[in-house]
Length: 302
Image 1 (cartoon, rainbow, N blue to C red):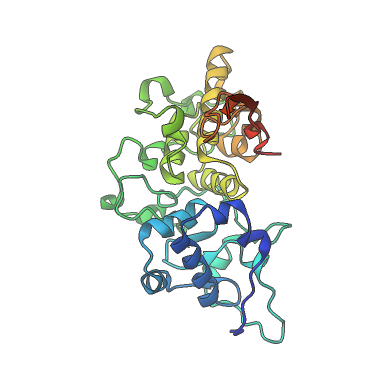
Image 2: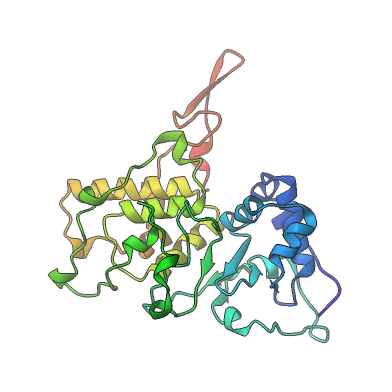
């Protein structure tokens, strides 16, 4: 393993990084120092204890898309290639080849999760009432998942994966009526305080079409959040799209699959002004020094 590590101002000077707690920033730095030449480490708990971080700090990195924890416990720095460039004569390939095979690299150097081949896994994004809220990507082991690992939360993601991918007009695969199974939800600012796992569960439960491989939806969600999408905006976009489908009585087969909606379609349905904005709180205007100003949070995605 090469003994030198680099950091990129693109990552470490970004608002997303600077908004993190100082101990979370230190944790990410130490993960990078302890990772192998492909950005993998199996010492996340030891590193966490070494810097005095808590599981909350680990979750903060996961939710921001900086790291990913596989079902095996191996952790990968999702921005490893943005930060580092190891010389070929010093490079040693990671020993975590099974986990490495589940990733691909985008044009900016970020690791992305590969979509599954219609495989469903219920351990990827846990519900918010589990003791360990790490976002994990399981291997193809659906038949081996013991029942005592499933949560009983009304937002548990395991409740939304009963149907296979829908590539036909088969009425037998029709989506359950979301109005009859919608869990209690949060509105306004509270929604924007939700972390990614809980927000994902809420999006999944309220989205008007729940057919599809759960892992494909997980990949699309994590990719969107890693690219800067607010979990609250994704939930709000899903709600608005669901309302539109209900209002226009859109046939089930014409409703976008959730993973396709999360790729880019969600941008059309986000609120113009962010309900989570600390200045205007979604109103579009704010007061300062007895004067009103137009808020710029409508340009949060360029």
